[in-house]
Length: 387
Image 1: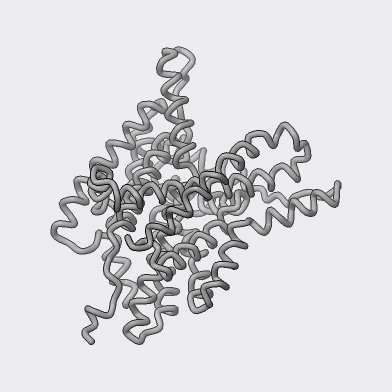
Image 2: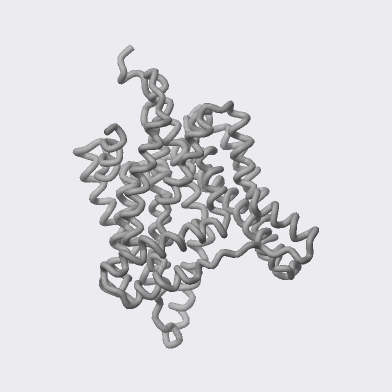
């Protein structure tokens, strides 16, 4: 059989989901000023502008905070399955090659981290080895491991300890010093000083924040979930009924979880119990809402003509998701950090900056995919993988 036949076809809805996730990430990063949080004094601005600032901030974080990243992580696991299974169909073992691919991703992530302290590719490169360790396991075993990771085992341990040991204290690592160093460089530093601070203190803070907020285990669980989605063919149109069963469960679970998270501080005074409970329940609530978003995209893509047309327009943007993700950090730091234009914009103006970045990137993507099969960074990553 010809090698061109021995492969999974590219799934357009996955690219549409990638495009959707990266667009949401750009909007969030823009209103955060790319982890800088440098906002002008708003005491003298109009009430209407104060309202739009709060509405945009709360609305975007409610819809996409912790969810867009989760979609992106799930698709990372899905992409691994496609690559691994394509090589399996050819009689090749992709596991060691993927380990090398993660090393390359670590390098690309550090390129991004030099500009943007909140990037996630370095963490993906470190956590991604879980896919190599689990890809040959039975589906039920992988499902169990993914569920354990998504249920935040560290948080459950801390909750149990805090319930039975009143004197128990959560081990807290001091990441504040690293945040202070990077924030000072973002505020006053030159380009090379900012790069140096971002690559060391910025990454230590970013990874520390991810650990403290349950992102490490959640990412591992989402990676395995994406791999299982690929293994079971859940993104294919003939499996849309499965998502029809997921949607009501996610809806039923999300609202109580979100409500409990909001109420917890009023009923739990012990910070060593409150903190892990909030992390666990927030993680699960975000997971449910992420599934709602995925279901919406899938049903819109396959069942609703008007929505499908809009989502299909995101396919070129999704095909260049890594290029778009890395370049948005470079552009954002050049706009907001001291070494660049050092813009001081309110939240309402900042979201329009995010839209402008998306438009510029989208135009580039449409032109690029007309002439190339892979984006610039995607091509480099692919070629370097097979060195």
